[in-house]
Length: 633
Image (cartoon, rainbow, N blue to C red; front, side):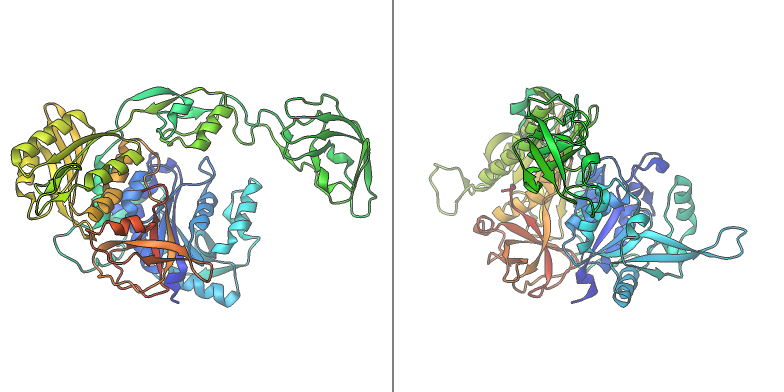
């Protein structure tokens, strides 16, 4: 197995950008691209897959990342690189994780190779880059550790979780608990990070441009998938308008504003266990100390607190969720008691530590803090969370209105007679399902014939009634001539040939009519191509228009159960069935024939296998990326 196949790359871009005019560092323009795009370009050849850790402007990062996932921190509050590392290790589908910051576009091309060699040689958990630096006026250089340039075992996640649970956030301090190999690099400039706009301008003028990764061979007039997604993401924006709804009615709607917690949750210190509330000072002092027997002076129930304050040698019987009695700071679970008498309990040495089994007031949410952020899609757990705050109504963004229709003289609606050479219109039902699942207000405009006047009338009506228009058919090279002319009259619409399969033709732009406008997504006519194009292009754009925080599709890595043929130079989306192999690891096999008209390949599948632009043939056992259908179709 090659080193590349063992490594996932993580670009750390989770900061606030306070030294860059409050614009994210990674999104700063630099040499015709963004900083994060340059880092991605340097990192991608060294790893099997790249992810980006970012906490705001997620759609812009997703546009720069192409098919790579964008991962926000699990910990709220911009808690630094370790919080990003935590989510990276959670996601990491490979044995190793390679990290680099978003503001270092000159990172070494052999970073992974050299760090891995040191890890192997020193039997280390983690390898980190080091350079020799010299301050002005200093006689001797010093060793400079670069903790964000590191290669580590994915198995370190439990240690990192435990470290973060203590409240600590410094990378250097966490490293002290691990076996760390330090790797000396000669080129200190390769690790320069760009912290200010002044430094950015200086590097723009002085530094040589990073070596570009050559584009894979492909059709000269096709547009890469990542570029098409970037263009769409840059143009669409959330719609205006919101409404107040009763909490239950807000399920699956998008929050229009932050929900601020009016109370602490929990509202008071309470017990996490059934047992005995006591003073930590009464626990056995050390290993040689005798057992301690405490007198039980009362009982505390959830909703019925015990107001007695135990004195030395006393405790209170307590139930889960009950308020901690005055003066108590620990709870002994009843199953850990050495002996339970009628009015006493005996505790052995080491049963618990002082402070154990308490849920502190505000531990879940603090009064005045953000409980749920604007842009969150309300799920069942969110309803429960908001209810726990005593909030009965929430403000949500209005539903996105989407008009859709199919085009083609050969199409017949259900119930019509099926003449020779005709087919029933399946795409409109597929689009209805995908748009409804997305939470849109749908406007079904039926089948539009291959007639310029009919098409223009349909587009004008749709632009007046909807925020977006989704069509199927009429965008291929043979069918798009008059369609292109009509759309040119009505607005700004581009016709693309995309470097992807299925779904090569796509139209995108804005249709304007009678003072109204709507974004148009012109999808191909083949049933599978309609679905793939919708999920890869229309869905993220519509979610952005809806104001949601996250427009990605859940992704993971799995072993290919069979060899897969693939031509470099285009992105392919093949339908797959994900299950568990004999070794207990996820594996994926194709559904069979992958023609763009074989709709049964989508009904049989539970995922899409993504074969990226530069990939060639895939061998059996090789890792591939899969997009999960769960909750999608």
